[in-house]
Length: 59
Image (cartoon, rainbow, N blue to C red; front, top):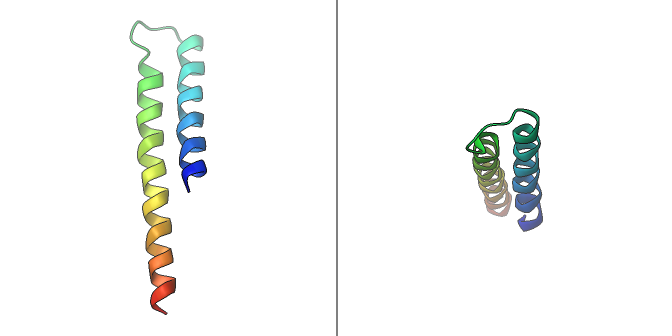
């Protein structure tokens, strides 16, 4: 799960940096937005996985 979180966050950050180079702005806005979205997405994936693991242990 840690590798999955790292890959999702890295992909979001790299995509944001790429957008910042393509559409130049003063505040690295795309990097900030996409890295935060990637953090939330990775947390969602981890929580979803933990819930599915706990449900399978109950059965």
